[in-house]
Amino acid sequence: MNAEWQPDTLAAQLGHYIDPVTGGVIPPFQPSTTYARDAHYQLIQPQTEYSRDDNPTYPLAESLIAELEGGEDALLFASGMAGIASLFQTLDQGDRVAAPTRMYFGTVKWLTHFAQKRQIEINWFDPAIPGSLEAAIQPNIKLVWVENPANPTWDIIDIKAAAEAAHDVGAPLAVDSTVASPVLSQPLKLGADIVFHSATKYLNGHSDVMGGVLVSKEKNNRWEKIRFERHHAGAIMGTFETWLLLRGMRTMFVRVKHSSASAMAIARHFEKHPKLERVLYPGLASHPGHEVASRQMQDGFGGMLSILVKGDFQMAVEVAKRFKVFIPATSLGGVESLVEHRKTVEGPDSPTPDHLLRLSVGLENLDDLIADLEQSLQVV
Ligand SMILES: Cc1ncc(COP(=O)(O)O)c(C=O)c1O
Image (cartoon, protein in one colour):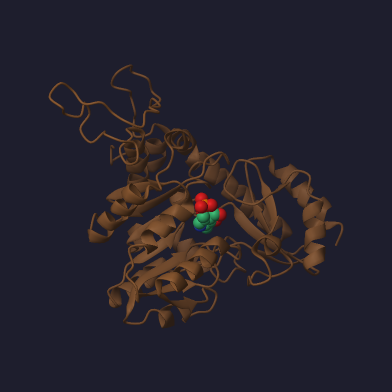
């Protein structure tokens, strides 16, 4: 990759990809799971033996993501959760980690279950409470995990400060940067050691690929353990999914910037709305994380925001039912806008407020999105 080019140039051209065999400007899709040897019993392409690690489509996507994040290496996984699991699998029984109580609920659920089974201790912290993260990072911590911005209230972690606190006790900092995407934030450049994305979201951007990616600042011992885990436990992304991901990443910068601009406009429009208690969006000066987010994000604050309707659980569901442009569905980061009543999905144990609706802002016309939200709120 040409390191002198801007990241959006690298992404648009997949690092100036030209197929060496045909001259095609789009990478070929090689579905083979196995690769033949020649008359000397040597692999025809070095390190292309069996597709659980070696499909020629993977390195193109992995090297682009590593370059965009400023890491030495990246690894693709079959889903975001498979990537998260591979990182936590590097811990030993009895290890202690620090993790937030508020983040993507699936991560809280899986981590709680995994930690119980593997006798791993968790120092939970509340990302909305100043000092909570620092208090959780005790000398015996082996890994600090954060999500930034954090679902579904978009709490902002000061990544530089978190990295310093983690490094003071010799622990690496891993950041789930799914919502920011590599377009808006590069946690490795702020001191983090590992960056994670659910590639299902903004990286692919079209709601048609499940995938995850870990990026490491260094190819160290921990990274080799993660690579071993992926190769032998087999949580690799499918080849076709990787090819679709490459296609999605070509437009990622335009998509993410457009979604962020629309989310900002929606947040501003509805901030003082009489039917709402509050709009949660780190781009608003009223958000507690705004100042830190302004420092560590560029080109926008992301396409995700939440609204707290005036009313209870049922009222929030009533509003959710009335949307006509926003699609009532889970997930985020696609070209289509989605609305979700998170408490319904997360269940009664979740700390998410009953009256919160999460919006993933896509690429539709902004006036249509604002009008849709206005008409849905009329029920309040
Ligand atoms: C912030 C965040 N991290 C991780 C995940 C898990 O990723 P996946 O659904 O691709 O397994 C999600 C999924 O919604 C997410 O939103």
